[in-house]
Length: 354
Image (cartoon, rainbow, N blue to C red; front, side, top):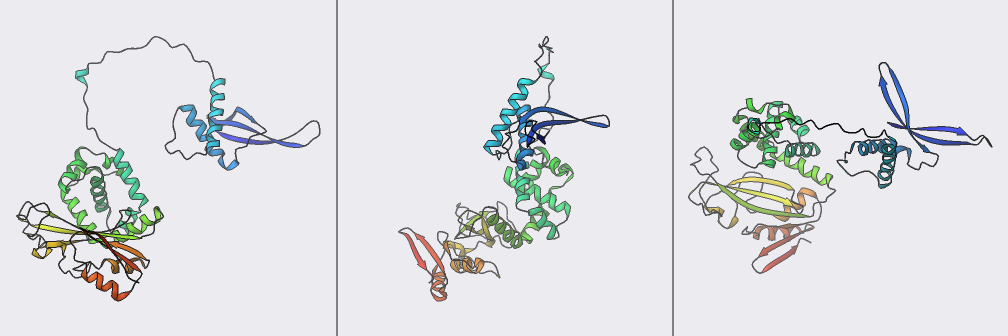
C-alpha cells in the first residue's frame, strides 16, 4: 500500500494541480497489479515524508492491530482512521455466517508441555542492546559461549533474582531465553554460569565505566550527586576457599558466619558508578573499610572520588557509620568544587570544598 501523487491539468484554463490516490500493489504470478483503493483528492495535507507511516497505520487500523509504541503524530493517526473507515464502508458486505462447527474436547486429555516465559527475557535483551553490552563483551575478548552464559545470568537476575545454581535451573526449566538467543541452555552446565560471572568480575571496572557513561547518554543526565553505601552478606558454609570471607559485625545478626562486604557508589538517579567487595573483619565495625590495594580507600574519600571521576562540581553522600574525618580534612585541604553531605542523628551537615 502506498500513496501516488499525480499531476493533472484543468480543462478550463490548463493550470496544473496534483491529486492523490491510495494504491495497493499485489503480485499475480510474474506480474504486479496496482489497484486504486481510494481517491484522496487534491487537498491532501499530510507531508510526503509521513506517507509511509500513514500507510502503515491504515494497515493497522484495517487489521485491528494497535501500535506497539504510540509515536504517530495525531494528524497522521486521525487521517489513517478516517481512510480506514472509508475503506471498510466500501468493502464487500459481510456474508451470512453458516452454522457453528462445534467439536467436543476431552479436557482431561489436554497437556501443557514445556511452558516458557519470553516477555521479560525479550525486554532484558532489548535493554542490553540499548546499553551496547554485547558489543562491549566482544571487544573485551569474551567468547561466544561465555557471552551467552553471561546474558543468561544477567537476564536471570532481572527476571528471577537468585544464585547461579537457581538461575541455571530457571534457564533450563522455565525460561524461553535460549530460543531467543539460539542457545540450548539444557546442554549448558551450571559451571558455565560461574565462569561467566568470573569473567564479568574480571572486567568489572571497564563494564561499570561503560554502563555508567551509556546510561548518562541515554537519559541525558549529568552526574551531580554521589551516594556511597555499604552492605554485607554471609556464607552459610565455612567458605574455606574464600580468603575474603571473614567473621565480623553483621547487620543481619549473623556474626557466626563468614561475611563479605560490598561497597557501592551510585549517582542520584540510582546508576552504579563503582563497586568493590571487601573482607568483613573486626575492623568493619562502624562501617570502616579495611585498606585494599587500589579501588576504594579504607575510609572513602567521597568528595575527592566524585571530583576526580567526572571533573564536574558535585555533591556526595555517605553510608551510615562510615568514618568521614579524612574526607573532611581532604575536602578542606584541596578546595575542590565539591560538596559533602554528612548525615547523622541530628540531621545533615553540609561542607563545601571551596
